[in-house]
Length: 213
Image (cartoon, rainbow, N blue to C red; front, top):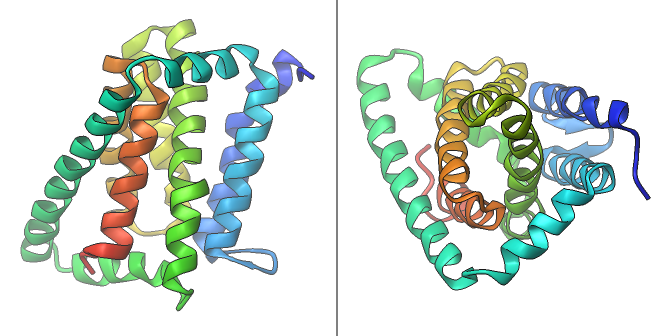
């Protein structure tokens, strides 16, 4: 089953509709943030796979070639990004009066949810799913139509923009850094698997194992 080209073009708008209010209210109807995020990501991934057969084929090819290397690079890149955020956390708290409050607010997204549930949803849905959509679907398509630099910047910009619904400048800037970082890695290696591993491991580090808030 394929959905129309016009419907494909509406998927970035759907991402804004799903993620914007979720980040603003930290809920999706009766669902808390983590269930809401997981459902939103699952919907976007399902629709993007239906919309673009080439995405499915690219993912299958991605899994067949150099998988161990991609996983290793994913882990390593996640550690590098965590180091960047650790340093940024120290500096921002020292120079920005509002940083500590906004960083604390990011960790408020946990909402006293069970840490095991958060970890499993990050591992199985949120971490890999976000990269399959933002880089494996949107950035890949935009790079084909607009060129690699423009596709990279557009995908990273939209990724940051959807976080604006939170009203948290630190979160928006963090999303921009992450979008540019994972987008650059995707541009270099053209591997959604690599950035999915990186995103997932980074999420686990920043939210579960070594939180900065």
